[in-house]
Image 1 (cartoon, helix red, strand yellow):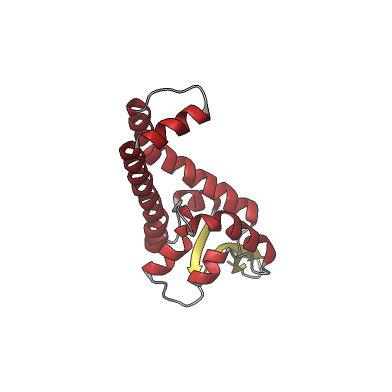
Image 2 (image 1 turned 135 degrees about the vertical axis):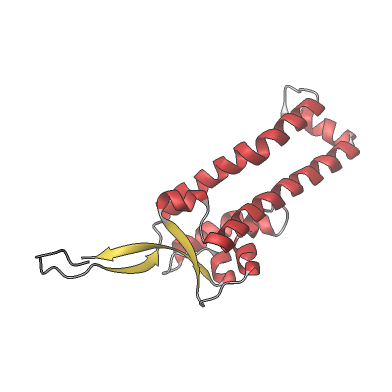
Length: 169
């Protein structure tokens, strides 16, 4: 941008891989939002319907002996996971950012111009806590550090990237 009276070159920008610490902080911010809005109300419901135990083994024994409660708990946790999955997928599909990404000025783009909704779903599958998706809890961060483009495995599979805008002066 040229200023009046000054003969300065215009700023140039490019989109490159987002810094890992920004991605991590954005995810923590989004997880905090999900926890406050989605998980917190369910936590109260679950705690009020289950007796208090002093140890993990007592809780485990209770869950084993009460299959109907365990099934209900599984359904509730899957429902919460699906809501969290759609939190990421819908926001990234509509505005290419979640609130955490907005705060840290990073966004999601596709390798091609048009990114389809299923691609945002694929990149967010790590949220679902069942096999094989929970393997992404380990594999996604590993790929982030092992690839030249700083992409998670789910980003490679979905053909998307998390980027930030860099200014060249």
